[in-house]
Length: 406
Image (spheres, rainbow, N blue to C red):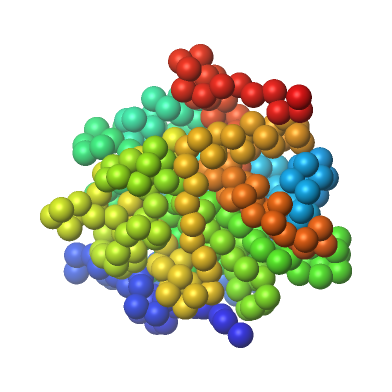
């Protein structure tokens, strides 16, 4: 039986930790102590479940893609419909938990980073709900790619600050959010959106996202009377993947597969396949697999999906890879877009481009599996935010709008 958790110093095996300046360590340790205090507190749990149910709309369905499964001719494909959460992604599971924790810690301000914007929208909405001031840092490139989500954050009362340094994407947004947080840590709570960063963030985010795995496990047993053969999720930082994996990690018969973006190709700067093609290294306060440049610094990365262009990956994923408990593969921009259209036209469900990477791998393997075998894909978000980007790329001739039913 495989089970993973971090030790008292925040390490999953050799990955994780707190690689931060000395003054930040007491701030992180105070957060870790607060999380340990409240995560098993009945009143905290009751309030968390109230908002997950009545605000976000949990539990989300486990949906059998009958049309898609029939077309593939192999395994049954199920979707864990995190796209049906309030605001359209799994991110709100974590923002509710962390902001409830922030309130108990007496914080008045929320600061966060975002790539695709879904974490930013969820943070802004939850901060509005809880009456807290909110600032979101977002790479300037991603601000342009995700204009709709930027406006949604502003509608919800958040101040969106473009990151203009470096590549102007997610890594730089994290850098600038961390800098701003440290300057006012006494009053500010840093709400990290993925299972990355210094301890306790990877463990804390995993715990708040584990609701996805618990629900999926219960639902598939009810629907099929058995566990799935394979559970697939996209991986950028890795919060949606670690959330659903947590429900099955102790079940050795369930294959866990994380799918990273291979972008435009496997050359330097053309992809963000951090765990597949990277090596151990430290960035943003934690040790994990990462992509490096010639100087050993975080590499330039690219993905068609703004939420996946990050040069490292959560430390628990690195540990699962080394244990051999999870497999990590990659899917290209084209494969993700093909899957995006396939699900849209076969099931009437428009997936996020991030989630489309996971779906692309399911479409690879399903035809070679038996009809009584089961795949669960974590559909971590809906594709509304990506429609304008895809329409523009189709109009520019980058991709064709297929008619898949013909």
